[in-house]
Image 1 (cartoon, rainbow, N blue to C red):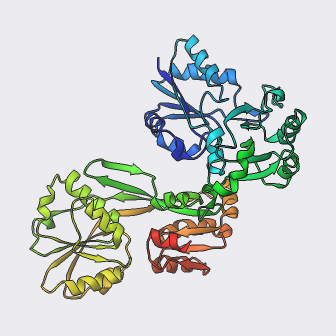
Image 2: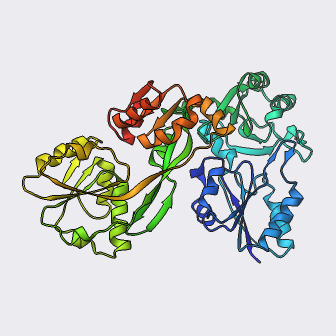
Image 3: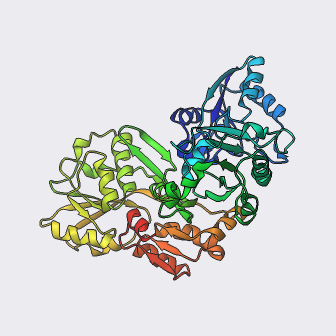
Length: 499
């Protein structure tokens, strides 16, 4: 018999998941999750884990609560660790208490992991402190949703203190009714009110009004569920404290094809990860990202016998971080060589990302091209090499000719294909088409990304196309699109500066 963990998924933003929650998800055998739990959290779980959606929407229950309770018991008898992933906190109107009692009655071990409640977090990102000296000395959190899917039986006579912030959950359909109820017990009709949709996410929106006007205001605003209603003088601080909504790319939406990278380090060994630095940066600046996997990096086993024949001053050249990681995986994991065997070599790299990858293995580059292209790196090597040496290029299977064609003819170049970019055929689903129609732009970080995705989305391409550099732009043009905005510096930082 296994254990069930009632895990609070937080208010929506994946980074507001607790450290303990992340650790447990990574070990889960089965995840039973709600509509309000961020689906991206499922990617933290093992691929082999069973994932069951039991979300509820007004009048549309995937599974009734009593069936969910029974499912939890069934899966606890089947698996060692079952995660019940619930939006917000399990005990804040999440029926977590009911589930815990049912499990206990059936002899199932239960653990509860708190989550950040949207009743506080969504207010924070909307610029509304739930308490504030001189404006609010406390708060009440009230459900506006009953078992009958109607407005709950709220005793408005208990909500007359205007020094207490009122937070109503699950009440979007009843905003006008709630406002009327509060005014009926004497609350000032000019009391500020906010309705916050999709709080803490990059498509958060809000509507500000008063008790007298919010019923009409909400009809004009594009506010969708899930939403939170806030009543109190603290709402007046919203425009002053809405730092979250003032991020430079807030409200923007971008299409971003990415590569599933092969990753290797001395400490962690081989890791497969979907983490993308550009996506993280875009999100931190306020953008919503529609990310698709355009391909994956596969490391190849290569013959390293050339290392034993090296002369002092021979070069190892890397034109991507993937080449660095794939080479050291071959060196350390496949061949079991000590890094000191590389003592005769000098190192040349393209760009600071590749330089950083090399440095992570304890080696500083001798030649660095600041410009992200092979021609510049070839020019720098041409100037740096003043005696006959061998140059060994650790490269991709399908690589551009810029570096090779511009290297001095008297320099002996050996190519060692240590990884390849395997394209993934993109499925242009109805959901993706709808997302593309809403995007402010498409971002391409390599020619291979463009090649893998543009043929599938060409009929739905966003108006603005952003390219990381000349080689990428050339490929986009070959695929039929000229409306390209190109980064001045061929890097993620260059893309962000462009946006």
